[in-house]
Length: 149
Image 1 (cartoon, rainbow, N blue to C red):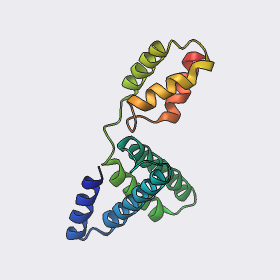
Image 2: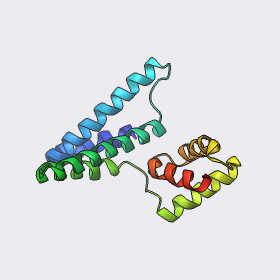
Image 3: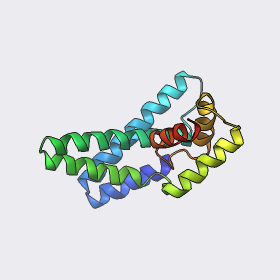
């Protein structure tokens, strides 16, 4: 994944795409920060699953900022956040459809033998290991809670 981002940054630099360059540099810096944190925890570097989680968090931050800028009437800043979201999403796997998310939740509930909200942690852990970067876990958490509650 790191090599893909580095190659994309080099291509953006050659094409002189300023928005893409700044966004990819920001992503690269976030990856380096995560690697440093992993080294202090005793690992050599962050795993791809951890990086997918990082990208999902970056997208969520930008979506929140985009909404705030749009509400404040700052359309140019909202558009900038939107462009960054598109660039970061390129490095995430294909997102699951709502129907696929429902199937994944049903399978995780059955596998974990979950019968109440107390078992929600088991179900969410199973979803996060299998579908990292492929679904919005905040929405999935609400759906799991609705099914178990």
